[in-house]
Length: 293
Image (cartoon, rainbow, N blue to C red):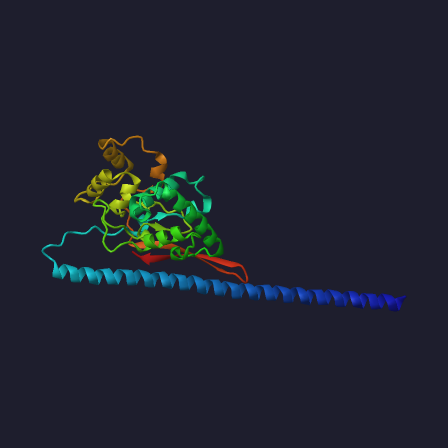
């Protein structure tokens, strides 16, 4: 009996020792996998950041050169061009993609209005085509976001040939466009973004065409001139409501103002959030960087 007890005790000690070693090994493996996953996700995140910076620098250099050449050739005839819509003024569709149109009805209607206002030539006058397109876009974008939170708008598959052709045209835009004169249409990428934040639309840096979507063309022109003139008053809700009232647009929903950033914000640096995931270890990283505006 003493021998059996001794053997049992030895086996028990060995089993505890084995379990302890096995547990430490498993913990070490998990830690190693987490570290490797963290490094892979961080590398993907940095690559996305560097790619964004490169695209930003490339897009800034070419228009500047072209504009300088044009001004030197046509200086007497050149009229002052309005600056393009700033990143801070783009409509962020992320909440609409994630929460759906039932939870974001105003953002849904504004996006549909923007599509209708900007891209009617693409749809050839088809009635309510903007809603059909937007529903397909939101569905495809949500699927893309589930696979990769850093999905590119250019790679969304709408699963329908007609919609996809229209989408490519919207992404590309035309070389010349003027919504007032009904000439051409802008690139969709100039007016929308999909970032995992709830950024408001900066009215001070918005192009009049986007302000037209929010209100109407006449108000957009007056408001833009008012806030960008010399000794301009501070951009407040009261100022916007006064201009709207003078143009007989009253009863503006407070929810619209909740989507807007008023005042005169300084966006010398634009904050952009990046998300990256290592699919093997399911490690997800989220970091914010500041991009020069």
